[in-house]
Length: 298
Image (cartoon, rainbow, N blue to C red; front, side, top):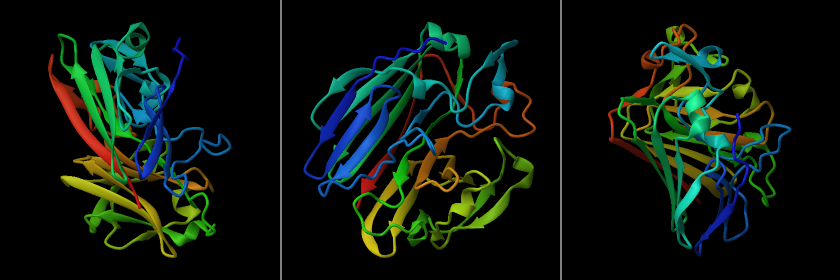
């Protein structure tokens, strides 16, 4: 596959935040507050060499990294190809930018649909808002999933507290959720259990040794809040009607991901037919799908 490697870093700023977004993948690579504290994981490849990729046109791993559509088999890597591709900047101001990826010869090799994927970022006070829009530019129904994968430093840079276990995650609404277990790299829908998130989830590296904690959500709004019991600094990810949320870190790594997903990885018993994929979305010709999430610093 020949991906374009030209990339540009776009700087956004206001009185509260300085943000850097890479046109490769439309990926947020830095969020610093007015005290110069870096919140975004800085992609140390020793653990995980990404910051906050956009997941499209799939979320997670396909069974055997392939799927079938209209009688033909296609191959695609984990989380799709958008995170590897160059987006064009279509609009930019000091505190906002809009980036687009359109289907092309490279994407057609992996994904036989005509599309426009638009990611718009806007600073609003101490919050970075992200609007995700998918347009079906083709004549046939389009099948896709989309998600976000932001990773945050734990511990936060420039703070004296260096203990991972001092951090916690609160999920709102606070209640018991259905947890979808991994038989890595796939989910196992036959082994769904309950996870009590009515109280904070205290961070320990061991809780991610079996891969991500994935919860099923039917809420209009989901908030995941990363905080520290000894400091006021933290981050909050709010998502509009996500179907799933992933909490993840690499083994013993100093970061945690708070991931809103509008889709999910293949089940261990998936038949490989894209239309049958769990969490897949169907979009008619010329229709547009919109969703959003935000990252708020405190």
